[in-house]
Image (cartoon, rainbow, N blue to C red; front, side, top):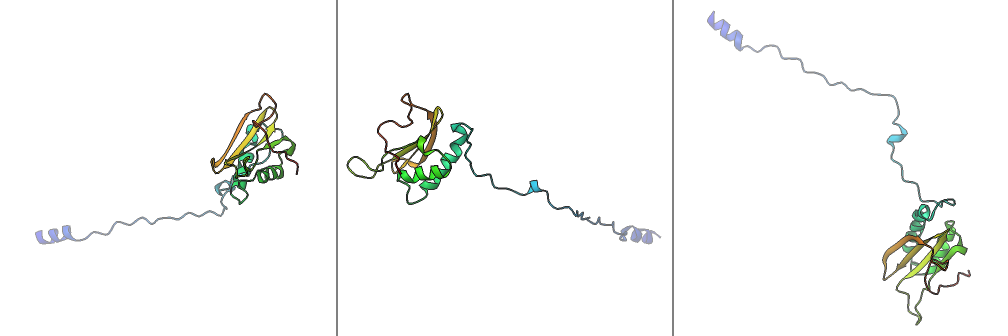
Length: 151
C-alpha cells in the first residue's frame, strides 16, 4: 500500500485550465478627435493687432526666403500684399548698396495701427528675423531712406 500511496502522490494531477484571452471588438468607427490634424495655416486678422498678424507675416517672410528671390525687397512686398497686407502701409529698404553691391541685409515693414511688423533678411542676417515694434515718432517703421513702392 505504501507503494501505491507513493505512486498516487507522484502521479500527475489534472492540469489547471489555462485562461483563454478574450478579444472585444466594437463596431464604432474611430472618433474624429483621434485623427491627427494639421495646424491651421496662419491667416490675416484684419481686426487684430500686429502681434495677432505676426504669424502670417513670419510665414510669408519664410516662404519668400526659401526662393531665389530671397534678397529682393519687391518679392517680400508682393508676397505680403498677396497675403492681404496693405501695400500703402509698407516700407522696404534698397536691394543694393550705394555703390551697387548687393545689400548685406534688407528690411521691410507693414505699419499696423501704432505698431510695425518688421522683417529683416539677407546674407548678414542669416535666417529671417521678424518682430513687432512700436511706430517711430515720425510715424514710420523703418529708419532712414527707404525705397519707393511704386509698382
